[in-house]
Image (tube, rainbow, N blue to C red; front, side, top):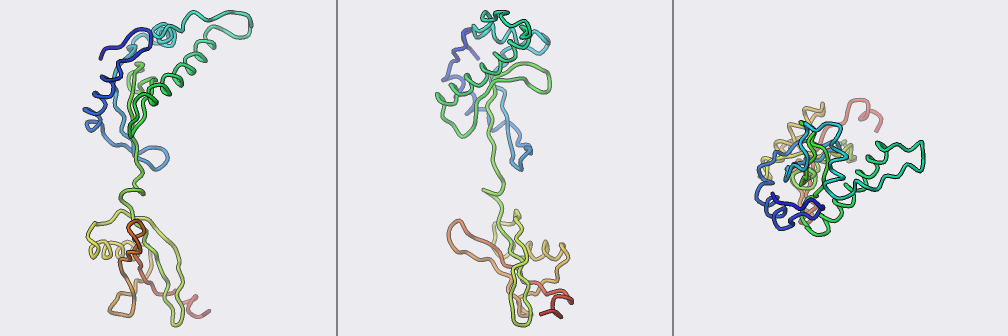
Length: 211
């Protein structure tokens, strides 16, 4: 990919490359329950340059000549890392302003080989796209009580989703009351984005005695 050595990227090439190749990147689990996929768009400095990479990146973008040792406690190494962080933030902001997209552009170190790269990353939360709430309802002689709500990824077929939810609730240790025994295990559609599944369960012996 072409780029200038003054930090002005070829925006059309960046966008086209990201759109053409992001589907080749593998989704992996992120630290906050999300899934991420990250694409390396360009290697700016190869990893074999080691500890020289920060200075080389500043030089690449024309930011390497500002150090002045006014403070004897502020070393050139500290200044270099501070300037690199400022550069990363400013370039990421500029790229994302210029290239609106579902994901995020940024520059930084590549974990596997230490090279310094331009990246494009997308992320998603499974809860937003694929999960549905399963509401566990305790059904006593003359009362109903909602015990807990769990979120699950289930079949798109409603009947199959209910059957899978029944199995999952039973696996948690509850005694499910099926529909033919007076229970109500059903797929509930309130509105387009508020579907949920109700699963009725028997009360424990102690709870039933106390009611």
